Image (cartoon, rainbow, N blue to C red):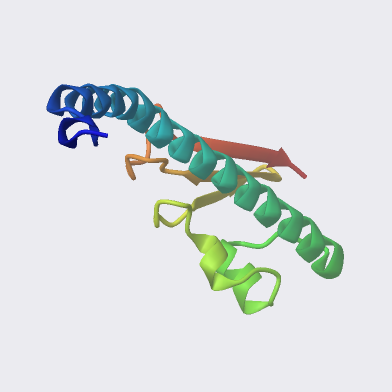
Length: 122
């Protein structure tokens, strides 16, 4: 073999780098969307766990808890369960035997379209 037959040319390397750049441009936004969807689903599951703890509390105490802190104090949930996947405390309300648990969602602001709300009638 001759000296010039080894390795890749600069043009070949630039083409490969351009292809990798295009693939990353397509893949990275989809990766962030998937991560956000996973956080929303995990928050919904945590909220369902809180509802299950409320059912257990009701069976043991014949009443509904006045706040989520009561569930922590009584040992039905851990204090880490009081925050959603974005680190915001859940909003809890009880009215007419209906529990509403609300997560502020990704924007961390209550009352916006990305809020996650679970209602359960007891």
